[in-house]
Image 1 (tube, helix red, strand yellow):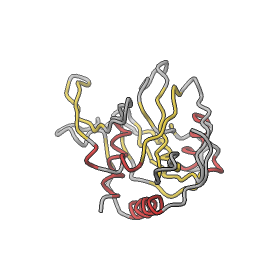
Image 2: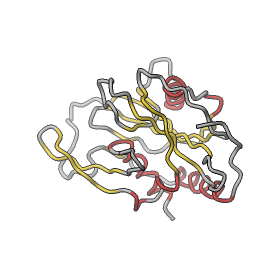
Image 3: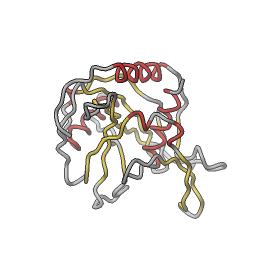
Image 4: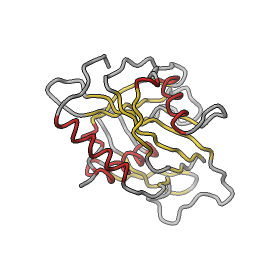
Length: 213
């Protein structure tokens, strides 16, 4: 990803308008159990607050317009979720004033995105994970594309997917796998070689539903 001119086109403006309208639409908390009938987290589970940054940057190619969503591929050396696709983010630390502060801090630490380059647009509904986190997705806009500086200890790769692809509910499908002795269903939204699934895909699917006409 290299620096470029700020987005200034009809398609980009229209998509941004749909995003802002999506933020105004009420939505329920989503969970990793939504697609698995009868599944529910243990009643004794205490969810830990976390936040992720859903960062939008202008599309690079001059022949196209619109926005891309910045994603990461986690390091294969990590203990939790190695090699999976995720947003920049993590758990709230005591010094974080709110989810926005946590999302911006994590994006700075993980991919080198300076907080001052992000215009915060709002929050999406909280997503609860099977691993015990209550994730607040924070939506932000970049005026220009940025040059990522990934933290090698956490991030294997930084890439971006067109919002046009991710905002189309028809791009999503449901798959399942065995987990803790039972089957768990989940959304996937593949893009090229990237297998986007689980909580990341569920958050994006919720955004796609809210952006639908």
